[in-house]
Image (cartoon, rainbow, N blue to C red; front, top):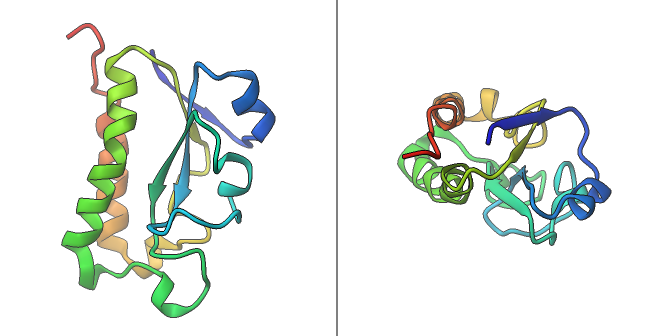
Length: 131
């Protein structure tokens, strides 16, 4: 099954499509209901991918490239359920605006990490469920 991109994702979408996985930008604390998490957190078919430390707007809540290796390890860990779903041939919905693009501000705060996130996302396209 493919990855579909959806502009606006609502909690009702997740509840109406329990067989579909929905990805959202998350934080390492796995708390908070701002941004995409508002509609997806706590739903059994939601997959959070951390793009910052905490849901705060304090400077220490954000990722920086000083912790690049740590950030990448976290991203790779969080991508595993998405990869597994695609290998099983299940449908995954990705936010059209991306993750790490709004509240996490990765492109500005951690550009190298953001590029790795984009590369991981591009890599999802090559997953073949028939293998």
